[in-house]
Image 1 (spheres, rainbow, N blue to C red):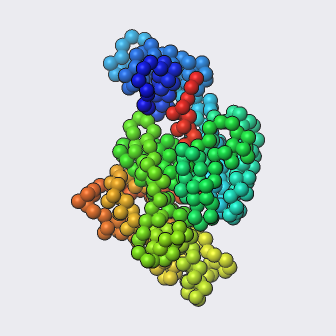
Image 2: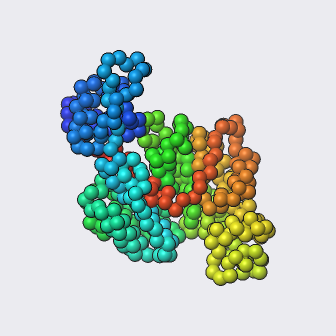
Length: 408
């Protein structure tokens, strides 16, 4: 955090409180002396601020530290976050479904709701989502005033600072003030964090599944759904990293003058490898009398990704060819991401990769196209698709915001 020159004690106090709270959050249970050493602050400063947080009910003593480690005398009390002291709402709005969740301060899932009605109207999506949040709170016997933060994520280009969805091409949503719309619809007066849904998943992994990230200095999160995004995250030791851009790799041109994309360009990755593109290709094959196994699984309408994966597993050659092309193109894109950004870890979440055959084909495509001279040790990890990962990630954004701005 940058400060203007000159004494500004209130701002220094806020900075100290936030820094202390983040250390407790990420490293607790922890001694006060260890916090002081970690931040380079005096023990009295730590003690004063920790006691203030204990009085506020968000931090508590959890018992004496284990002996050893060079500590002598009376064993110091460890301090940690009180999970039930603050509650956070997360919501993912995708048009074809809406998911909301309630987390405690430690990110434990307390309740969730999901609606899978296909709805392309932006205002209706906001109304439906806010109604679900109201139901969630009533079931938890909480009021909106007891919520410490709300996070909302959506596909597309999102300006997180302004809280605005700038563009979702496939739905025609442009310049939508999500932050204000959610606050007005719910009556919520607290902070509302807004982000891209792939970025939210990256936040969620780093905050709620930190062991998965480990000591990777940077990691990327490739999320394949109706669109494709791959944000890059700077993973700071002992704190919460920064998501660098939305990583809209879905509009990376893979074949110049290729298939048309919803963005208006041609040959984009999204036009070949998104769930929407795979379903459309399979529907076309069925209409032409091909994809016999898939036709037995899906007698009417567009097939689901689950049906496509099942048909591929049962040996439908036409479906296998469509999936193979989509997976190969994704592998080339992932190799390009690795060549350009050199992340230590690249996580991949998508329905296509419920198939181990597709996972192996993806890795092979990456291997053939990655530049080993630049980096040969990027680790690739497949994440099991989870309908709650977006909403939980959005709540993680709100928790992160709280840790950055807390004032007792």
